[in-house]
Length: 215
Ligand code: SAH
Image 1 (cartoon, rainbow, N blue to C red):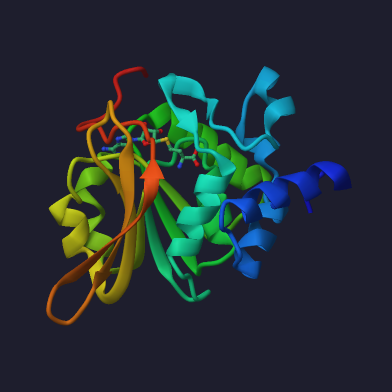
Image 2: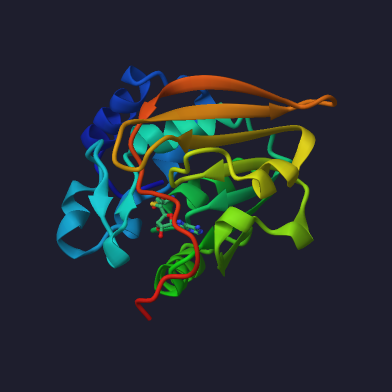
């Protein structure tokens, strides 16, 4: 259980519910992961506000309600092998890890991967495998995945990721121009192809090709 006081936790969960997060398991996972562990210094005191916050490398930790909505949209079963693109702080991966069997998470900035790995170790989360790489190529050697979550916006779903989704699997990702409001979509892979569903408007940092150069 997170160390935030009862009042703060109640407000946190209320904000999630008011954004349409109703899945009990998702709400429990959101309560259990302490977001303060995934933000830095001065921002720690704002960890329970429903707002994105800056992290290293000019990136952001997503808004909690958006993390919860994306997690809910994935319809996790507890047995899933999940691929997340865009580790960032590691917060979203930590939430997924409570609801899935194993989470592979890929980040283009090695510095963010290292920081996230340290956090997973400190929190003793055994089922997240963080990696540095260009996530738009996915992880072909480890495919197929039951679920794929992309936490950076591309103009279209990257085709390698579609190819690495198991038949019957679900991918959730923001699509659209990086400087505009994007749309969160859910893709179901069927025997015959892909079904696309629009969920809601969102705003994410862009999915960028290649590795970060800030090392
Ligand atoms: N899921 C994160 C928030 C992600 S912000 C969290 O919970 O904190 C988006 C992240 O995607 C950034 O860290 C950015 O560096 C990363 N990113 C952008 N393009 C990428 C790519 N092609 N491959 C891997 N990571 C990428």
